[in-house]
Amino acid sequence: MAIITRQAVPADASELHELAAKTFGLATPPGTLQSDIDAFIGEHLSLAAFDKYLSDPGRIVLLAEDEGRAIGYSMLISGPIADPEVAAVVAAAGPGTSIELSKFYVAADNHGSGVAGTLMTATLEAARATGAQVCWLGVNQLNERAAKFYSRNGFEIAGTKRFRVGEIWHDDHVRVRPL
Image (tube, rainbow, N blue to C red):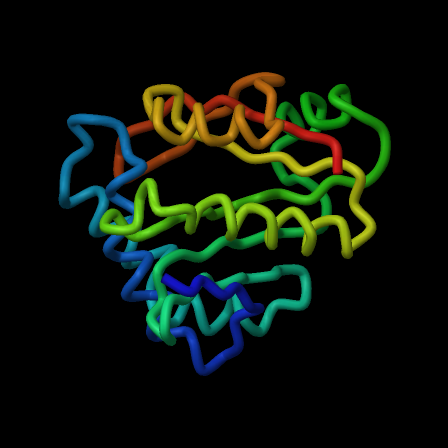
């Protein structure tokens, strides 16, 4: 396996959408309805959504590939945090500007292969390059696999937030790490 990471470009939108459709459900809590997962994908991870994300100068989308095949992606979002409670939690975690690690997914058949570590290294380098001093993310409190991975990569629990999938609100941990 020869993993490469690179910044995604508009021509990658379709491949990113397909990868997102395969991976989003892996991170949802047990019992999440497939119809809610599908609706979330349709609204936030569609081809049109990725076209928008890839043209947004406040977002950085990275793609992990093996022999030209997309196997993981991440998305960083700069700018003010919309949720005042999350903004307060992140501000309390460290001074300076922050950047959100909004999405971080690896195809299921590549779990445990080192792809996630390679992608995280590239993602944190891209976050640092923006000048941000803190990186933050939200992860479902029941997603133990992701929680262990983020903990190994220096993200510590700083608070909580709510995340909606379909009609159901889920509880996330807000995790932060200095850059």
